[in-house]
Figure 1 (cartoon, rainbow, N blue to C red):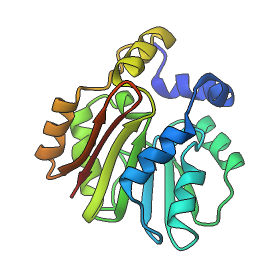
Figure 2: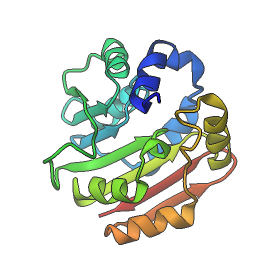
Figure 3: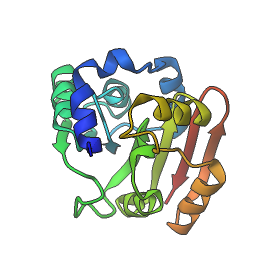
Figure 4: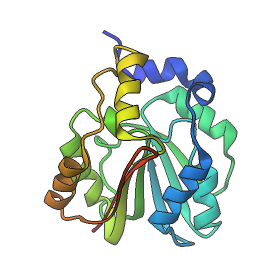
Length: 196
């Protein structure tokens, strides 16, 4: 059986052509997050680093961005595309990554949350990495329905990787001590932002 890591490694070089990331929507989502200059950001499942230029523009050179992904090939592509001094890349499973408790101002899961095996555990572990007042954002620049339908068609490895509905995600946030401060679930995008 092919592992998710193997699947994402196999498509890394063609990922940006395969996936349509509407950067106007991405910028809108990041405006909702309201990232401040000088902040510490964790970009979970960075993939090819789609968010990095937009995140850098907001945190500026005074902030720090850690881009993490479990697929080595994705990290290699992201590194080639992004050479900012304050962006750090790590190939690792964020849920097995120890430390960094109460460290980040913002944690963003863009276009990757369905791929967590245990989503409730993911929210719980990520929330602990936030500072008091920090924000966890789960977001897609497509609708929940479009994301779930896409995964069914792409590859057997990810066909069961679904994005839960907003009610379930809000419960996960609440159970992890996060107050939902923003939610968008429409035909254009899916966004939930919680503050610790």
